[in-house]
Image (tube, rainbow, N blue to C red; front, side):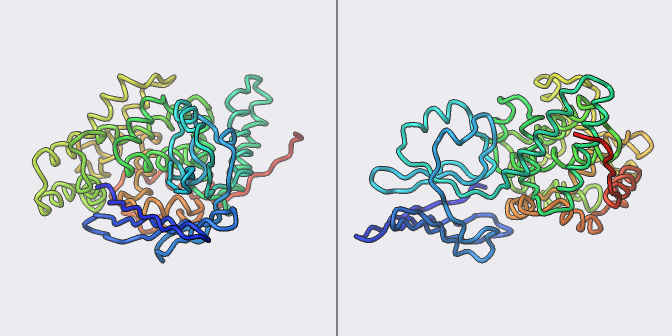
Length: 384
């Protein structure tokens, strides 16, 4: 369910206030946010008045449109100020910026950005990923791999956020633009979950010893379209919460939908979406390792074979399929919680792993490998 947005503008001789009142009609987590953009003395400052907001009193800076990277993700919220001094938000942090959009927006006189990202982290990690992807010499490849793993581990144990990591991995591994735009146009939950699940899956794959860059890229793209089947007119917030409820025990998702008196179309979509995701991905994604796409129908399977759609037990699920199942468990299905996860460092997200119902999932082998990697320190004894 999309937020209801009311925009009011207050004018005086000294300053302009834009009040953006957002009332989320989320039936489970209703809340009200007031955002005030104040224009005074040639600058603009955004004042967050909602105490639950993750970012408060963050300065907005005027930027040149040429600083905005096309075919990338917005590093922060982007606003325009019109000739009449009105301020409107164009894109939220993490939105995909099409080349066509950038050309269209050039006519606006002023662009402001409220940035949440760490440019240095994104630049360094993207550089290491690209060097690793492009290296063909076997000896240099091993060196680049070590540089990448060391950089990644340092960022995980630092204050780099999941938002920073998501941008860096997206820069190198992003799927086709048509797929990205379908997710972005469908629902904010599906779009933003895709970024988080794919990033986590790539990090976990590297930590488990999957070091073929083509394989990791393909795994990233498969994770990105994990819920492609939910990109559907019948998708609703109840369907999203049913996916989350299904984590507790097999059958919980359908029970939740029936309790909420969801329509039969919503129930059918929930049950069919793993297969729908696979079918859509097979027709639209070209991978070096197409067998990876079979993982799309595994993410609701259970350790004892009680899951759906195929009731597959742990013994028949590969480690790389388990990586995707595990990554999916990390990411929330509620928009408020998803936004919070973007602001966390991966090490902070990892602290919550104990609260996940791992005993039900076919992921034990990969979890132990990931835990060991998180505790280790990579030694780097090569020269740049």
